[in-house]
Length: 259
Ligand code: PGA
Image (tube, rainbow, N blue to C red):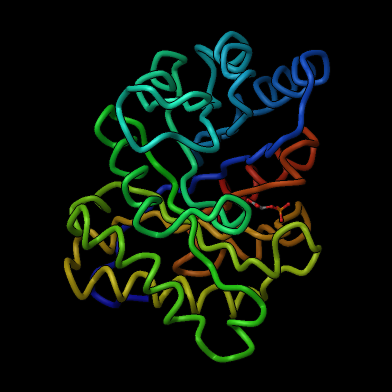
């Protein structure tokens, strides 16, 4: 926690559906999430859906309290890149957010921190809020290099875009060993890395650091969200599995509204 630089940050709970969904089941989930969110003014909520379902999310969620976004974006504005999707295309479908640098993309598609930084800046160029994922593997944690790994992932963006790229931005700390495993980082473990991230940004700009929204992700559920979100540097969550179940996701959003 940065004493003297504390500002009240709004919480954000963002769902990451990953490669899950189908039109009929999405319709039920989106309707339930939309109607359940009406009474939660203290927290921003969003769902990041697969590209083909952006139109459905837009149609179902427009005018409500839940925003929507995508899970990846191309780093360039347009061109001959078969199969890719630009930030402007996401904006066309009303997206507010896009996840960049999720550990699954870094691991399975070889995305480097430099490429992730380019994607982050491409999203910002069109007015989207990128959610920059950072986090260490179990092996890296056990070798004691968690901070080094997270710092490297963060510094790639600061080098390319300057610290001002993090103004009103979102970073998600997701330890790889906690994603989809049911093994959540303890609130103290997560808080320690969140505080480290904020300090690192503060070494460039204290004001940007104190306004930075830092989410925790990795097996967040309705029964552990409140404890995590109560930590001083945890500003909400990036929710995978639990975002596919309306009641679970809404309970996590409620935990964000209370803390
Ligand atoms: P999980 O996924 O909540 O299922 O662990 C989180 C994420 O990968 O964003």
